[in-house]
View (cartoon, rainbow, N blue to C red):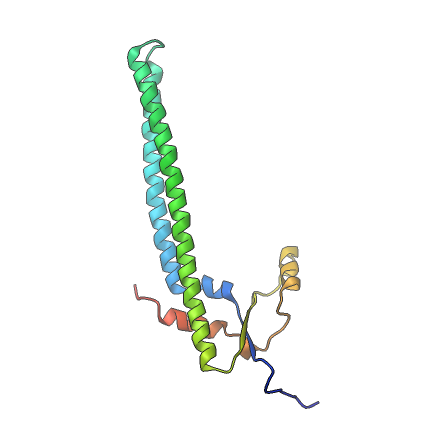
Length: 173
């Protein structure tokens, strides 16, 4: 039959946010930078752990009751506690920075989507997962079956458009 389009019907498009995030140049750059910083922090932690181990080895050589040993036990206990506090603070800071990065990127994507739908006659954008279903992976099948978008025409998928727009604005290296 003939296609009927009601002028009052909303125009709907879809976007694969997971794909956009995975291929977002600025996000990858920021994540890589954060990973490098995490490696440096990890090296610092390992160095401090090795210092504590050497301290323990020295402590083991001293006899019980030796006043020097008592002093060293106290210092080592403080060093171990300080290391735990430092590690917890580092973990919290990295998680916070990671959340800020993803929030900023999400806002950039939202801004591009907003600008794009304002330039077109699209009324609603729905998130979907464009990854093909893997029939050998039960989790993949269940995800696809539970997805809100069952089918969309290729031109309704804004993913490549939005990805191009956000990546074109990414700061060069």
